[in-house]
Length: 215
Image (tube, rainbow, N blue to C red; front, side, top):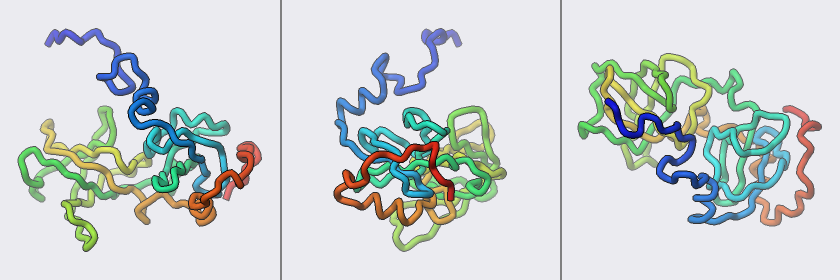
């Protein structure tokens, strides 16, 4: 189509920011607040971060932890704690079902049960055949659907978007609410208790990752 931007390089950040880094943009508009990184399976204190808002579920870049790869698997917003794990893509974390909310259907209504649907859960060429059923919950006041995809996916991330298609037509999208059987990544009890500590300076120095014991 000879678009004027056809020779521009791909952007890995927020495209409209130009050369401004994402972290610099967030720091300027939201600020920073020191918090801690905890290993989800053990509760081990691994280091500090600049604020939970710098991280998204499934993120790998920017953690600066040795012995990885490490992934962000959960966030405690109230206590400014980020939980990380090296097991984000382990076999037992594969999922074929997840819930989606904040739905936006371009036609104004959900697709019919007879439509052959495909689902895209991340940027890229990959699609899954999928089906969806209405999710009913007394605590939920918005339209929520449960999506079943044709193959296991290890990278479903709460907070990311799922887009739904019929052939080449995008029907709409929504926000992934959860991707784990118990509605969140399994965080051990010790990690949850540490996250609630008011004085986290008592944790002392971060654990040396090469000496971590696996559960």
